[in-house]
Length: 340
Image 1: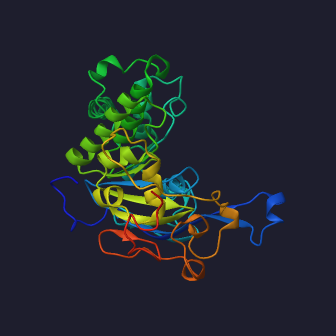
Image 2: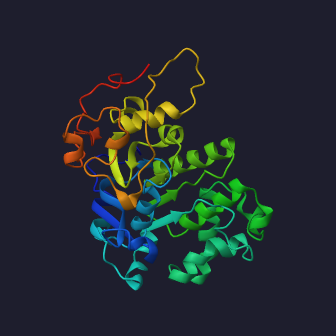
Image 3: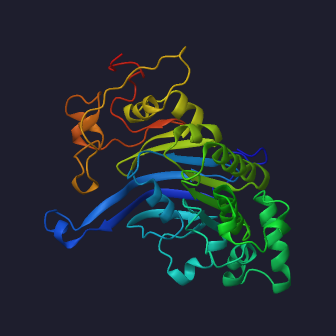
């Protein structure tokens, strides 16, 4: 977290008990009790200025849906989202235009998210023009400043170029510059480095860290890469089947995980140090469909710790102080009931 901010600062983003439902296709609907699929359920977290909160988990766990809900791209069925102190949960599209300068989204694909016909200048300037955020004579200066903050220097080298002439890393930096040009309080980055080589990815994540530290910007980083989250995030949440199952300081969640699913994900990360051995977690069964969500804890059909009726009676809520876990066996130590 930025040295200029503290945990006492009001959140730049505050998410409370958010649920997101999707409609189903007609053929599938006839087989289901309800005509909606819950993609995100009872998700709560806050992000303060200068803080990077990472949301991790397997594909399909709901983390990108959370990103869409934060930015008004996905309708929230219930719950509450505040951005910079303003509730945005029920805003109409015209009302969202007044919030857009406060929260910006960086997309996953740096190759398809930029218009190939636009110059880099036009690409970065477009939000200023469409949202009418400054005078015409100020646009050029704002674009140059955004390119410099995205570490595309000297900016004059990029202004007249087209996306096709840039590398993947440069294109993603242009996407970040396009977000920065409106001077947002919150930056949501949805898998921003998943299509980049490892060296370039490190540069992008380091840039996000500097933006949080230098500008006091709140960052929500969505990624399936737990090593990436550990390297740059202050706080990390792990999602499974639309719910947060573990949340807290990155060093605790990824260094001393308690939830069996978090431990499973970390056990799947390649270990390049032969001197260290990690307990092997046995996982059985396939991930359930969100359309056929199991009763109780969503992880219990595959969980090595599932025991008795507690796990099927109800979904556990996040519990704990700084390090929160949603598990009926949260007091179980990380090495208990695992297979060596």
